[in-house]
Amino acid sequence: MKKVLIIDTKAGNLFSLQAAIERLGFLSTIEETPSNEQYDAIVIPGQGRFGTVMKNIIANGWDEYLNDARKTNLPIFGICVGMQIFFEASDEDPGIAGLAWFKGQAQALDFPKKPMVGWANLTSNVWPNAKVYFVNSYAVKASEYSIANTTYGEQFCAAVKNGNFIGVQFHPEKSSQQGSEIIAMALNQSLKEGVTDDAV
Image (cartoon, rainbow, N blue to C red; front, side, top):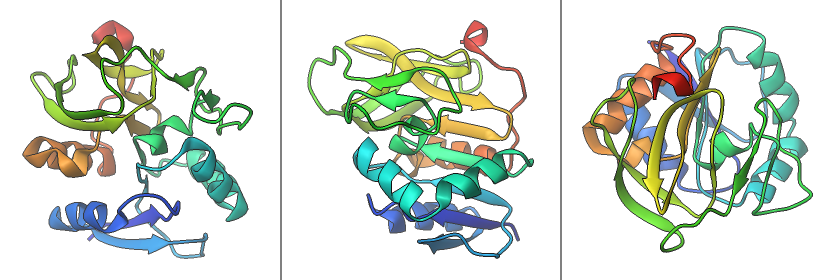
């Protein structure tokens, strides 16, 4: 049985995410600081401010841990702000740097209503006809590593993949059966390599 680490970023409801992961047959542990425990996958949960999450990531030593994990084939799954922190910055907290694994930043987009709350369709060859649940005020407009987009006022990046990292702007733990399938694909590293904007 695969073991999953859920990083406690001090933001959001970790237990609903943990329940969704364990329903899929994984063992999961929520940790506040890195340990010597060996895991088969890492999850960075969503919800919370970009700046607060980044400060907690750095204060608790997760930045170094994640950078080390990135050099391996260990699946890393970022959700909502857990995806945004892998970019360079966010309009939500100017002056606070992300981990900068990806070029670009989360922006305050031209949403009809903020925050965006509710179901929206994905445009994606990876998850055709998928409908998932969003709760966000900021998003990355575009990325060379995009595998899914959605539109709410304007189009933005709904998911990215590069190497062992998969990030989604939506909340798969709130997205019913489709969300469960996406969590399983991310943790099992079963998405194909090299899927970019050209495939969306």
